Amino acid sequence: MFSVPTQPETARPFLTWQRILDWAQDHYRCRTFNKDEKIPARAGLLYLVQKGAVRLVGEAQVSATASSSRVPRINSEEAFLGFVGAGQPFEIVAQSPFTLQSFAHVDQTAVIWLYWHDLDNWPHFRREVLDAFRYQHQRKLLWLSTLGQRRTIDRLLGFLTLLIEEFGEPCEEGYCLPWALTHAQIGSAIGSTRVTVTRLMGKLRQKGLIRTYGDNLLCLPAEAVSRNQESS
Amino acid sequence: MFSVPTQPETARPFLTWQRILDWAQDHYRCRTFNKDEKIPARAGLLYLVQKGAVRLVGEAQVSATASSSRVPRINSEEAFLGFVGAGQPFEIVAQSPFTLQSFAHVDQTAVIWLYWHDLDNWPHFRREVLDAFRYQHQRKLLWLSTLGQRRTIDRLLGFLTLLIEEFGEPCEEGYCLPWALTHAQIGSAIGSTRVTVTRLMGKLRQKGLIRTYGDNLLCLPAEAVSRNQESS
Image (cartoon, rainbow over all chains, first blue to last red; front, side, top):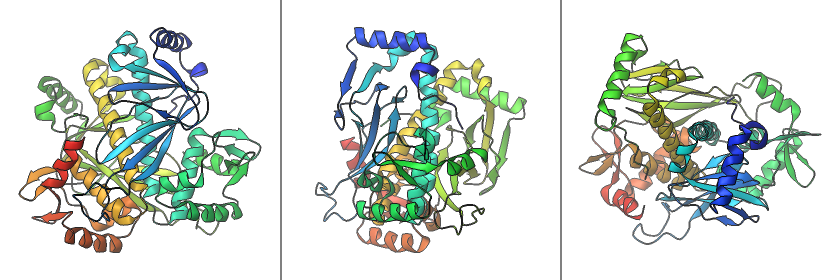
């Protein structure tokens, strides 16, 4: 596994990260968002999550089932594309026929933004940011691997495994996703519906492949995660 | 759209690219592969496609339907994860529960490999490579956006649109993917089967949303691509 850290306070060289935070404060390049508030991200800018978590969402404008290809398509669908945790960068490149958007996934999500050339002052940090995108790219390839699976239940288990492997925190039950995710959001990621996800989550729970913890947080049993890590 | 070039000969600073090619020849870091030959890529190395095209494939080892989670799962599935064209970098990070692999997609595909520290001599080129991964990451987010769509025909059209938007070349019919892709490969990318893809491709052709050209190459009508580019 790539070892790009998700906890900036401990893993980033403290001084650089602190200097960038100070710089962002001085230049009014920092803002805090409430849960589900849209982060008005623009193409060409670089965003860093200082605190909380960001949810990336894609919106498809292409539909083969629209009545006419000349008419604006109204049946657009939103897809959950993943989280960006504290200390991680993200960027949004608006691109037809799909639109990418970012939302605060939890309250008190703080985001910093920079122009790429602002990083000229911190070449080492720029390298870290680019390496973080390399890592995110590799994770998305794994994500695509599971979305290629034919059975929805396999896609669902693969998706949850990848998400918890990346963001999970140890808990009594094993490893636990620290943020809630609705069944509709899960369905939107794996090309399925809320109803189907609810049914298949029941099946996975019955088989002991997933658990829920506390306030409906998703967990993988410790065996599942350690088995994966052993063979990696 | 990002403007990362796919044609190294014209778009890379010629001298750097030529120097890297010479260096790779001198150090026996260059090899040519036949169609569908596996490229033995290892984690930690950086690969550059000099000529031809590379096909990335993911293999899922996770299955909710295996008889027991303790028993090695045999019903693994391979998913097509995209192309890497000439002048583009790729890397493979083996990661349980998924395995990434690379294959030559066409005959005479030439690949160069380097250690990351080899790029210490060419810092500007390293920056280009990292920017190319940034671009690939953004494309994969768009790809995930379409795979979140519920109807298979929408996923199929979105997938083909993205692929042709990225790699398509102008032809009489519009824009055309320069390499063949089997219906089984397409199915493996969008979580469907060869049979379903064949049926839905027929539907898309009937609606005039896709065409085929020459030796079964996939095309998008010019209107579709230009419409997308206008609104981007």
